[in-house]
Length: 139
Image 1 (cartoon, rainbow, N blue to C red):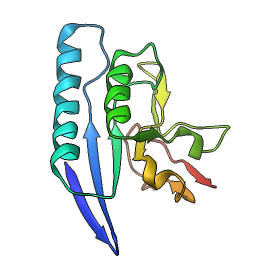
Image 2 (cartoon, rainbow, N blue to C red):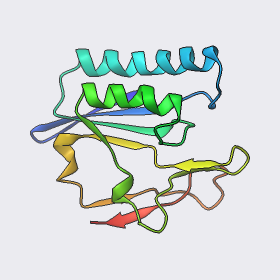
Image 3 (cartoon, helix red, strand yellow):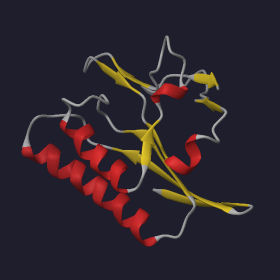
């Protein structure tokens, strides 16, 4: 899903993602490529000043992860950035799956926004059973 928000002179695309659970098989790579193809299509055809990709990528953001490696190509192509350094240095996780044994920050923004972000928070209801955790950071 994608939202297009017009705010003054800025037009921001906000892409909400839910990727398949990480796996080492070809089906996983194909499903991730399908998700990234949708995002690539949006970022290629829409007119915008800034973009945000946020949600549950279901992968740890590390070079050894095939999903993240594929995502890095898209981020590079569209001058986007992984936002983990905006979070609390003691806890940079916005996603945690204890069963799978991994956690990560699943927020990516266009480089044009990077210098303008002064605070990043994940706000949740107390009875939310999601595996997304609360995170906040003033910069």
